[in-house]
Structure formats: C-alpha cells, structure tokens
Amino acid sequence: MKKLLFMVSVLMIFFGCKADESMPEKEKTQKTNNFAIIIHGGAGTILKKNMSNEKEGEYKAKLEEAVKVGHKILKNGGTSQEAVMRTIQIMEASPLFNAGKGAVFTHEETNELDASFMDGKTLNAGAVAGVTNVKSPIELAIKIMTDSDHVMLSGRGASIFAEEKGLEIVNPSYFYTERRFKSLQRIKDREKTELDHDDKKAAFYDTDIKNSKFGTVGCVALDKNGNIAAGTSTGGMTNKRWGRIGDAPIIGSGTYANNKTCGVSSTGWGEYFIRSQVAYDISAQMEYQQKTLKQATKDVIQNKLTKLGGTGGVVALDKNGNMSFEFNTAGMYRASMNDKDALIVKIYKE
Image (tube, rainbow, N blue to C red; front, side):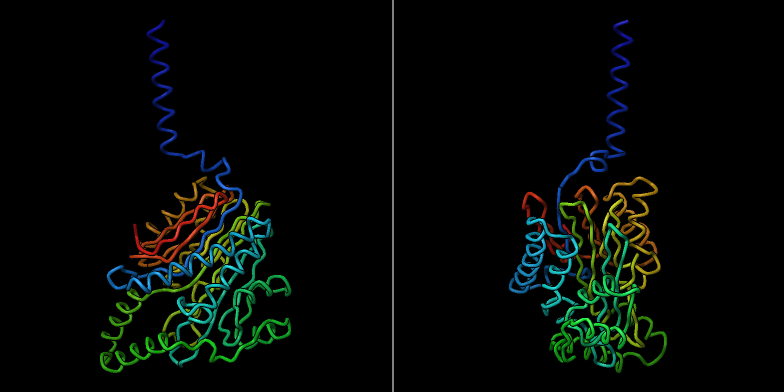
C-alpha cells in the first residue's frame, strides 16, 4: 500500500511539472502588474558597431523620457488612452524617430504621416493616413475615433477634419530634417547609377528595404481600471511612392487592443504585417488557442512572419500586465515600466 501511494505521488509530481512547463497558468490567470506601459521606436538593422556612444545615449534618453511620461499618467490614475497619446507625442516631436518631426521622405520629397489608435474596452479605433500638416498624427487618430463616425481618414480630408477639431496644424517644412532628406538623396542616387534594368531594380529594393531602419513608434498601456490601449505613428518608408500606406494605420496589422486579451503595436516592413494581420493574430491566438502573450508573440513574429519573409517586431501587453518585446531583426528601440517603477530601456538584441 505504501509503495502504491509513493508511486501515485511521484506520478502527480511528474505530470504537474510537465503541465507547468507547457502552460504557464500563472501568466494567464494572475495579475502581474496593476498597470504597465511598453513602447518601441522602431526595429531594423540596428547594430552596436554602427552606433556612436553619443547617439546611443540620445536614443535611450528619449525612450526613457517617453515611457516615464506615460507611466506617470498611469500611476496617478490616468487612462491608458491618455498615456498612449502623450507617450507617442514625445517620440513624434523628436527627430530621432521615423514619426512626426523625424519622418522620412517620400520619392516626391514630402513627408506623409500615418497613425492609429485602438481602445481595448470598446474596440473602437481611429486612424489617419497620408497627412502632411498635422503636428501630432496620433492625436488626430484618437480624435477620429472619438469625434467622427469613421475609423480611418486620409490626405486632405483628414487635414480638414483636424483643422475643424482644433488640432495643431503646421507648415509641412516642420517635418524637414537634414538627416532624413540626405537618406532619400542617397537612395535616389543609387537608383540612378544602379538600376539600368528590372533585375537590378528588384535586387536593389530587396537589399535596401530589408536593411533599412524602420523608425515607427508605438505604445501599449494598461491602466488601473484594467483598460488596454494601443497606438502607432510613423512616417512610413523612405522613397515611398504613389501614396503608399503601410501597416501602422491599419487596425489589426499595426495596432490592436482588446481587454479580453492584449494590446499590440507593430514596427517593421509594413506590407508583410498587413498580409499577416500581425497585431490581431497575436490577440486571436490568445483568445482562441489560450496561448500566453509570450507564446503568441513568439509564434507570430519568429514563425509566421519570418516564414513569409517579413522583418520587424512588436511590443505587447496583456490584460494581466505581462509584457513582451518580440522582434526578428538585429535590434529594436524599446522600453517599459511596470507598477513597481521598474524601468527597462534597450536597443540591441540581447
């Protein structure tokens, strides 16, 4: 009898351990953080050997500044919506990132800005594409959500709406930065000298785009009321033509939030994120396959997106305050803070 009881105990311990390994229930059911915030400033070929100590310090300082702004709002009982907007606005106002002030140039040497926002409580959302004179695209995306019957506005119509709602309108020259303009000129110069037939053109775009730094900015926040919000803002892709729109303003691709699961903001080669519906897929795997946040983000970025040929990453935050940075590139500008004031700021793959 004693021998039998011993064997039963051993089996219970063994299978209990196996269950813990395959399904981290703690992450699913227990509140890790009562509030938290996670951000990114873009993913791409970001290598330490190519980064000066001074420039690295600038990026880390701005990421820390941005995440602390949102964290303070959450800590004081503010909403996740306000935290996401204010955090992203810090990065939109910085020339370091490909959003707002630091937006890249189109082939026509203009700056066309995209952004989106989603509220995890109501599943309401707002997005803007191709605006050229609105200082804060993320604020406009939220205003479209709260003050219109629509989800996405674009171009001149979006600018008219912004003016009518009293948002700050700037001269398009506000978005000019010498660094971004020179980047465009280098690409144009290479086009002139290297693209003498279609084969070379295809090879050029493949190499250049894959090795570009995607400086899209994004933020996901969980407030003390349990509401998740996510937002993304970008200048798009250098040398883009024909009114190209990437994943950033597309709900389900660049941004998604649902209080039942998680919030996600994406950064990377937008065409692949659109085709994969990356942000929504992470939430769907959590809802329908009962995956944890880490399991879902890893599968979508490291498996599904990679197999398709896409590069980039996401920041994500679930309803219990668990956070995930997941990317398949050499680096991603990123930061987070939790309800214990623990700060993480990183750039390279570690």
